[in-house]
Image (cartoon, rainbow, N blue to C red; front, side, top):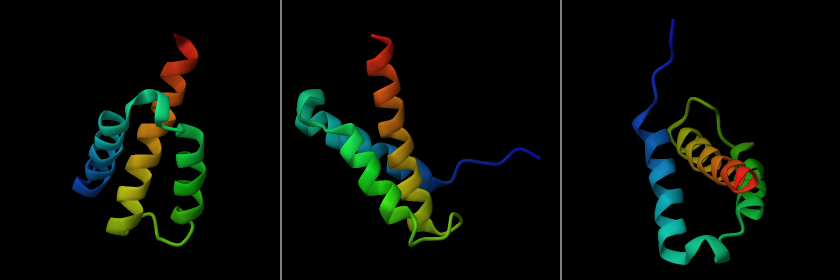
Length: 71
C-alpha cells in the first residue's frame, strides 16, 4: 500500500524553499541545516506533525545538496 505525503511534510518542503529564496543558495549552508534537522528529528515520532514537517524540510535540503553535486 503506497504511503501518502502529509500536509506537514509538504509544509516542511515549503519552509526550506522559503529559506532558500530569502537567503539565496550561497548563504544557505545546506549540510549544516541537514545536520541540525536530523538532530532535531530524533526528538519527534515520524508520524507526528512536527516530525513530518522536519523530515520534509530535511529532504528538501538533501535534494539541494544532490542537485549541487550533479551541476
